[in-house]
Length: 336
View 1: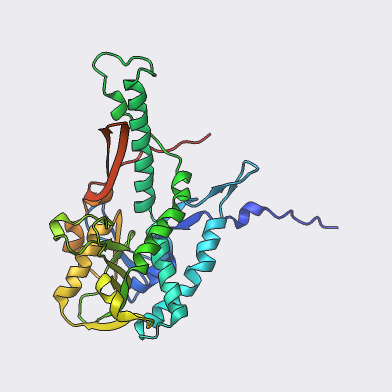
View 2: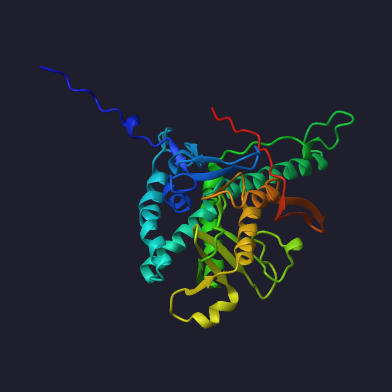
């Protein structure tokens, strides 16, 4: 009697965790089914790559289990079942101005998830946690609660590398989702149909929002701290369709779905693409090469964290905001 092979549960584990879904990138492919990928840290010409072969990291959403192991599927399965499988129909509805409440909920879920799950957001959270560790350590040193530092290294605690367990930035996702939801609920929306010869581009950080009252040179990504809050949001749906949110549209929208507008002016498309390129983190994506120079122009800067500890009466205050600046290189976390 032939002995049956024992199933190996590891064979069904998902190793490639796509922080930008394959189904989303399929909206930006060329006629060969490939997307032009611009690597911000490498420069040079883009590479045509199939969506399934890009925008992933191994075990990026893996979760520790109570038994001491690791679950590599739970978040990937959640994204797939709750967001990604509905995206093709939502994208088609936007293209055809057929956005009903169901399609809108799927559009909203994609926007919210791609604000929370991408490396640009997760690394910003990890940078904030590292800055907090350095600040607290420096405070303990000032209070004499740490061993004396060697001569000439009095400010060592502000310069040390601090590695953060990446799982901590997964814990921050619900808070990011909640804050994104607050922004979305304050906006009215329109779907923009691009009828020019210049397609929309997208990136590995495709959700952009900002305070439109600030000039471009002073705009801070995701910073809406002025009262009353005014915001604009843009999210490329595919190469020829854009979701745009504006506070000014909220009062006119009522209970109906997003408005629809056609763009025939290439300068308007370039303005949207310029914003997308500024918010890109390490990769930009396009269906053709028409935006090469614009993408290259913003390749060295992305939304990053600026933080500091401020001495105030009664203690220390940790202050932070996002700005456009050089991307950090985070120390690699090494677990046991």
